[in-house]
Length: 276
Ligand SMILES: [Zn+2]
Image (cartoon, rainbow, N blue to C red; front, side, top):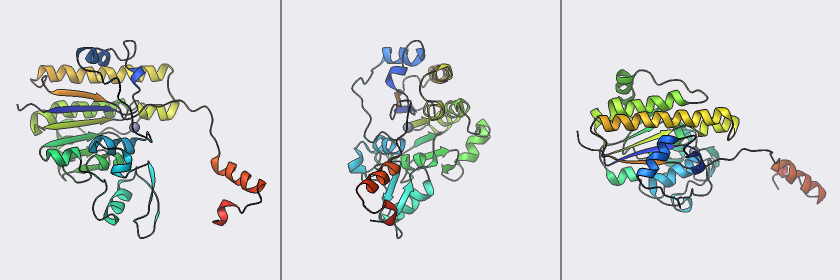
């Protein structure tokens, strides 16, 4: 089997301080055996799709141009705010931009051969990873090329439904990589973008028994995957475990629009809803 040059495992929303012996012993050990990028920082704003665009292009948001999980798409015939979670909105915006969603070539365009992306996050995130269709891509709502999902599900069964925590889908993507993608497709680069711990953190915040249990479960799944790599002759691959951003528990919300309206009333200004 030809060795993949790179296997990147992206744990969405994994904060560096979670990678410690008590919660994530396998990742802690992996870091001890290899290299830890202690000065690594997320880009700003620290949102998943913004970070995905930076990870796949290697540049900051001001250069790749995707500056938020919600952006104002001025190039559209009817300019409006779009959610970058929605790949159909991204496709429409990309067309309006003349066929170029990101302001730089992607990692996969540069490699130009035999790359695979397994993505358990949003279809928008999956589309950003593979905007120019330079790699094979599988996401629960989106895949490329057309027969990829059928072949994957024939080999490994149906993609599980989303859940909270979403460890079953994480396990599926890691099993698919080990059972089908690496031995059959022999990619030069493989990215596995996992939905945890981000998915659970959005639901319950950071810390607590279920959060720690999910971190341990995710660590165990990655450990099983690493053991399988070692057992199938792909143990010499360059394995990068990455995160796109951290997360903090929210203890209060500011009603920004309400504050602006109140301030406008105090100053005897027109309401923002009047369009002024
Ligand atoms: Zn994220």
